[in-house]
Picture 1 (tube, rainbow, N blue to C red):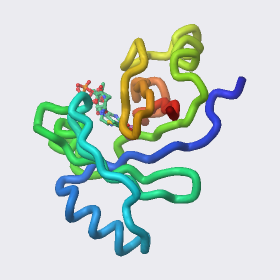
Picture 2 (picture 1 turned 180 degrees about the vertical axis):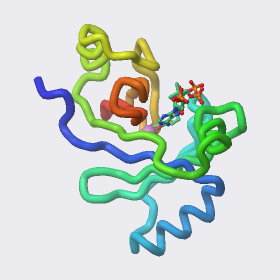
Picture 3 (picture 1 turned 90 degrees about the horizontal axis):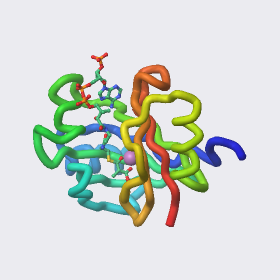
Picture 4 (picture 1 turned 30 degrees about the vertical axis):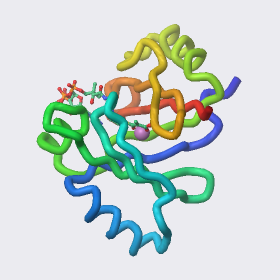
Amino acid sequence: MPFATAIDHVGIAVADLDAATDRYRGILGAEPVHRERVESQGVEEVLFRIGDSYVQLLGALGPETAVGKFLAKRGEGMHHLAYRVDDVAAALDALRAAGVRLVDETPRPGSRGTTIAFVHPSALGGVLVELVQEG
Ligand code: V0V
Ligand code: CO
């Protein structure tokens, strides 16, 4: 079974979600397809669809959240790369067996009713990786 079937989204940390949404709307020439607060992750997201993938703008719900800490430390920028997988739990098991450092030991709810899990940036070239299972 291949690790991933597609790039699901690229997450971008932004200081001002409304301003960033306006900027991206103008640059991409498209309307966002989704907006959602995900309290469990401490974010509010706006999604733009690009082909079969998304750009995910991420605003922090507070300074102690993952994105809040990232913005304070690094400023705005690319926050994570999300791979679409058929089965997050199975992908986590395979990564664990390969000795990869995980952030999440078990899958969690993401936006749009997805199931997600994060893999530590130290495991994949300094890039925080998210696994996304649709539905
Ligand atoms: C931190 N580091 C990163 C990073 N965040 N490296 C690459 N990309 C990032 N986004 C590095 C940081 O520079 C340090 O490197 C090291 O990791 C430890 O950083 P820290 O500031 O002490 O932060 P921690 O360890 O408290 O937290 C980092 C992790 C945390 C990645 C563990 O952010 C986390 O649990 N993230 C998963 C949840 C998340 O990001 N949720 C928001 C998106 P040095 O200095 O040690 O080299 S929610 C989402 O995408 C949803 C809902 C969705 O798609 O549906
Ligand atoms: Co994401």
